[in-house]
Structure formats: C-alpha cells, structure tokens
Image 1 (cartoon, rainbow, N blue to C red):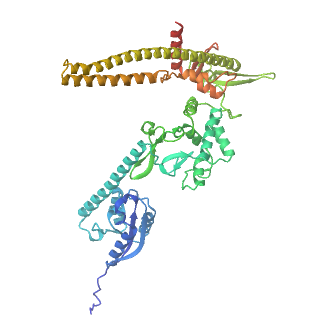
Image 2: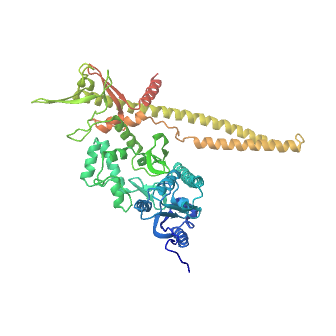
Image 3: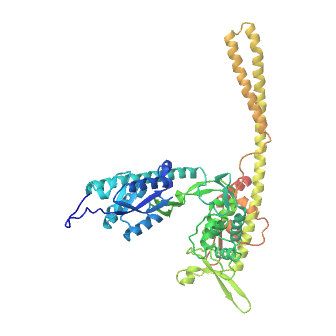
Length: 546
C-alpha cells in the first residue's frame, strides 16, 4: 500500500478522448480484405484497449471514399468534434487511411492538430505525436509517408485513366449512363442499342429543325407536350441520375436541344473523352478541346441519317433567328449577304392599307446610312430568281446524270471488248503450252532430252498452264460484270433528288445553297453547295460535246 503526505500527490495521467477513424475505397484494390472496415475497427479497438491513457470516444467511418480528397462525410464530422474539443486524439490504422494527399495530410497533422492539442496516432506506421522523437524526425516521417501515399493515388489514377482511354479508342462505351436515345446492351454494357421511346423524341427534334422550327420553338413544343428532358427521363426509368438543375429539372432548355442536334452519337459514332478531371486530388472537371475527343465511327446503330445530320450542322452554322410571332426561321435567314460589305441582309416589312411589302436590306446600311448602300431586294423577286435558278440546276443535274451513264456504258462496252481480246490471246497461248507438254515425252524417249531436262521443262510448262488457266477464268468472270467504280457525284445526287420542284422550302435551301449575295442594283449571285462536284460535271460534259 502506498501512502502520500499532504504535500505529495499521486502522479496525474492525462486521458485522451480518441476518435477512431476508418476509411476504405475502391482504390485499395487487392488490399480490400486487410483494409476492410471490420479489420480496421478490430485493430484500432485492440490498440485503444491496451493504452492506459486513451479512452474510446467514437468511431468515424468513410466507406467508399477516396483518400485523395478530404471532403468526406465522417471525416468532416470528426473535425467538427475536434474544433468543438470533444475529442483530442485521432487514431488510424496507417497514414494512408487518414489521407493520400500529402499537402492536406501535412496541414492537418502538422498545423491543425497541434493547434487544438490533438494527439495523432498511425498504429501500423508507429507514428504517435504524443511520444515525439523530435520535431525534425516527426516532420520527416510524416512527410515521407504522405508523399508515398499520394504517389500511390497518382499512379493508380494514371493507370485507370490509361485503361479507360484504351477502351474508348476501341469504341467501348464506358459511361455510367447511356446517351439519351440509347441504352446499354444487356448482353454487353460496353455497347449501345437504341431506346426506341427516347429515340422517337430525338428524331422529332431533328425533323422539326429541318422543317424550319427554331430551337426555342422546339423547346416550347417539347415542354408544352410534357416530354421529359434527358435527365428526368433517366430518373423515371430507375437510374440513380443526379441533375444539376434545380426546380425546373424536368424542362428542356435551348442548350439541351442544341447539344442534341450537334451530337455525333446519333449517327452511330462513339464520341467520348469530352471532359477530364483537373487532378486526381479534385473531382472538378474541365471541357477538353474537340481535337482531343476520342471518336470511333460506326460502333452502334444510328438514329439519324448522316445526310440529315450534316444538313442540320450546316443550318446551325448559319446562325439564324426565329420569328417572334410564328416561331419559324425565315426562308432566307442566314443565306443573304451584301455583295460589298459582306454583312447579312435583314428582313423588313412595309405595311400599307392595300398591300404589305416584304424586302431585305443590308444590315450595315440599317445601322449607319454611310456605312454601306441599301442593297435592297424585294421578297418576290428574290424568291422567283432563286426558284428558277434551282430548277435550272436540277435540269443540269438530270442531263449530266444521263451523260455520265452513257459514257459509263460506252466505257463498259470498250472494256468488255478488251477483255474478250485478252481471253482469246491467252487461250491461244494455252493451246501452245499444251502442245509443248505433249511433245516433251516423245523427245525424252528419243533421247533429245535427258531426264533432268525433261522434268525441269515439264514443271515449267505445267506451272505456265496453271497460270493461264487461272487468268482466263478471272477474265471470264469479270466479263459482263458492272463496273465497281463509284460514278456518283454529289452535285447530281443532291439536285436530282429534288425532282420537279415548284416551291422553295427551308430544308431545300439549306441543303443546296451556300450563300446568296445581293449587289447594289439588286442583282443576285447564288453560290451553291457541292461546287467542286459541279466543276467536275462541267468538265465531263465539255469533254463529251468537244
């Protein structure tokens, strides 16, 4: 039994109120079993039970959270208790469980914990700030372990990124959610198949735009008809999809419709890698330059034809405005240019009691009378001139197509005649070789050839006979077969399908016309798409008539 005098007191033992912090994430890979929540809890509990100066206050568990960031729910809760001084000791299995960001780990362990009198213990690393080996040694130990833990995250992040990029380059879909209009193939989640319900909406958006409806008109139509936007559609179909929009998340927006109209995924191309995480330390992402996107063509069934998609891209590029009254795009919007200043012509309406006049005028002149002259043209004159010119171009395309077919038929006939001559010559050659073979054995028997000469010549003539036989067979199979060369021409292809047009439409103009320039006296110069193809046709028809 110990006795103490009044002036003597028993030694005081400080008791630490400990937070046992446990973290586990997918990045732990093969170490999941040793670093499991159960195993960490067991190690830490046994450690605390063996310490006379430490008592367990509470467990803090972040299961499924990366160590690269400290924005974790239970870590945040633990730090709130640190700041409130409810705990003054933090214990982890090892430093990697605390965090894998060296600079942030160092800030907590080296700055915040000492400031609030918190003891830090990493059991397996033999780190205990309550039993310091000296400031310099503690700093070195913590810094080195922090760097090692952070290197692990960085290397692991780079490895995962490389693997995902390789899969993207092979055309595998690696997203969590399929593009609106598609769904993951149940047999292979790296492939996409059409979701017919959503695909109908995608087709409708493209069809409305091609018919002249502006983006805002399409947005209004979708919302008024109660069609859920892509994020809401995913949520309605049981996907745990979180939208950033608040309050109006079920509504379509201009941005969503425009993005739909511009997305190559709808013509069967897999386009991925549009966004990247800024750093393995941060979940923030940034948009990548289009040149860095990973694009693989023909990986899945198309919802929109390539021709319609290309026409939409041309229309979007023009940059048109919709009528505030009708919601439609003006017939010539974005196509009319001033021949002198190059700026757009804008639509004007002059309403008189007996008649309304519609005309177009140079936008520069409208803003400043001295900037340019009016370059005015009436709607009726413009409409009739463009319609007549397109009708003429259709006639040219039809005639040029007939010329090309005629030339192709002549070419085919000439090629057939040449093939027949080659067959005849090679059959004659084959008969000669047969005769040589027939004469070889008698010459050998009569002593004109020795055995070695006989066998050598026999092999040579048999090889030649086989070669001629194959060549004759190939020539005969090609005789009468249609020429496999591509005689298509973009100018003929697009203008000929217009047929006998009797009116202008917005889709027709955007498909055929590049721009229409208006001179000061009202003369027009119409520049059509497929100019190079038209030049080729002019050259062919010139050669035909020369």
